[in-house]
Figure: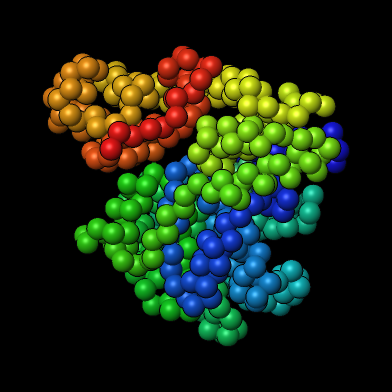
Length: 389
Ligand SMILES: Nc1ncnc2c1ncn2[C@@H]1O[C@H](COP(=O)(O)OP(=O)(O)OP(=O)(O)O)[C@@H](O)[C@H]1O
Ligand SMILES: [Mg+2]
C-alpha cells in the first residue's frame, strides 16, 4: 500500500519483505528432500525462521509433509507434547484429511487422547493434554509423537520433515531430551529433522561434541548476514515501490552500519523511510535514523545490561569501545581488565549470549550496532566493527 512503511522487523517475513537466501533455500531443500538432518545455527534475528518459512513453502509444493514446532512455546515436557501433537496434526494431514477419517486415525494412535480446541477465528485445531496426565504418560506420549513422522512417511510413501525451531531450549525443557530424541530419530531415515536455533556455542556443542547424544546427527549450516549485493537493491526497490527514493550513498551507509544483519537492516531502513518523506534519503539521514533506532532499542539494551555481572559489563564495554585482541597485555592494561583467565571466562559467557563474537586472533567485536552505540553513548557516529589483524 502506498504511504505504508515497506520495511518490517520482528516477525517472520515472507513475500515482498523477504530477499535473497537463494543458495541457503536450495541447499536446505536438497538436504530435506534427501532425508538429511540439518541444524541451522545463527545469532538471534539473523533470519533463520524466515529462511525456513520460504523453504517450507517450496517443500510443501514439492509434496513433502512438513511439521513445525517452536520450542519456545514449550516450557516443559508436558507442553512440548501438546505443541508436537498440534504440529504433527497440522503438518502431516492435509486440510482435506483433517476433516475425515485420517484425523481420527491420528488421534487414535496417541496413548492418551488429547483434548482438541477449535480456534473460532479460522476453525483450526490445537491440542492440550488432559490435566490428569501422569509423568509416565507424558514420557510415553512424547516418545510416541517423536516416532510418528516415520510411520506416516512409510505408510504414505512421502518424504516427511520435522522442523524444531528455537532448539537451543532443548535442554532447558528437559536435560534428557536430546538423548530421547536421538533414540527415536536414529531409526528414521525417511524423516529429515531440521533444527534451528541461536546461542551458537551451546548448539554447536550439542551437535559436534563426541559425548553429546546428538553428536553428528545433523549437518551444521551456519547462517550469515545478507550480502550487500542483494540487500542494497532490495532496499532501493522497497523505497521505489512506495514512491520514494534513496541515494546510493545512503544505501551504502546503512549497510555499513548494519553489516547486512537482516533485522538490524530492516529496522534502520524503517526509521529511514519514516523520516525521508518526499526527499531522497541521504547518508546524513541514515545517521539521524540510526539515532532513532538506538533510542527504540534502548530498553532491550538495558535488559541485556541488567543481566550481566559487573565484570562482564566491563569486558563488554571494552570490546564495544575497541574491538581486537583483548587478551593481549596492552589491551588488558588499557582497559584495566585483569588477568587473561578472568577475561576469557567473561568472554565465554558473553559469546554464549551472542553479545560478542570472534576469536583471540584476529580479535573480538560486539556485532550489534545498536548495542555498540548504546554502550558508547556516542550515538552520532556508530563505530564500524573493525578487528585489528
Ligand atoms: N531474507 C530476509 N530478507 C529481508 N529481511 C529479513 C530476511 N530474513 C530476516 N529478515 C529480517 O529479520 C527479522 C528477523 O527474522 P527471523 O525472525 O526470521 O530471524 P530469526 O533468526 O528466526 O530470529 P530469532 O532467533 O529471534 O527467532 C525479520 O523480521 C526481518 O526484518
Ligand atoms: Mg526465529
